[in-house]
Image (tube, rainbow, N blue to C red):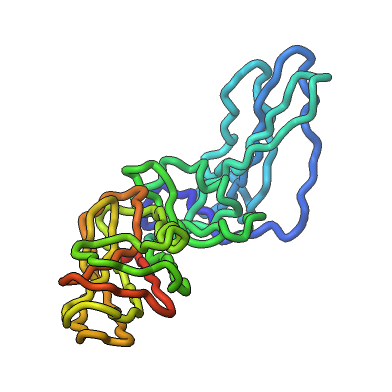
Length: 291
């Protein structure tokens, strides 16, 4: 679709090139490089452009040797899709830079081929959405939003991190009267993650669970929390009777007000009285950034 009319109420021109286009180029200059262009030209006799039939053409135009500025299309109703960087004769082959505008309807998703192409677009409107469709690294494909504050493309929300694992050996919480890391160093490291929050105005929804047994101590409350950048947030607490062979804590918390950027998170536990608690089975959490 080509939107080449100045009037906002004018509709676009749908078109496609269904076959490979070939053509001759102006020979390279013997002394100086230049920049050529390829552009799409719209002919519409109804608009008084001196054409006789409606048509869409792919047009080549050579630039001026020694100039660092590419030429402009010869007609108004046109737009450039590529620049051809032509070195002086005998110094190498021309290279092509794709400069076609990425477009979509109001509120639409801009399609791009690769993440590198998307990251090269640094002037998009804040919260503009785009979709990488054909990157050779499959994990790069997907939807992104432009964060004007960070001047960067970030994964579109919501995203979710899931982190759960079997725990047990070496995870004896002894008198954990305030939030404590998992005593087993391997589990503590596994529950420590770095996340990237895409936008300041979003919130994190944290869901977590843990199973354990109270092997010593009086009846009390057992609590589970998430630590973000050194601040503990309560997820849930359950009352547990003395000598309970198994209890489970599960819940969620919404956290607002965190800045965009990188944050360190980890799962934590606490008890309300002196006790000996051994973690059983599994523990884990998920974190979702959402609006």
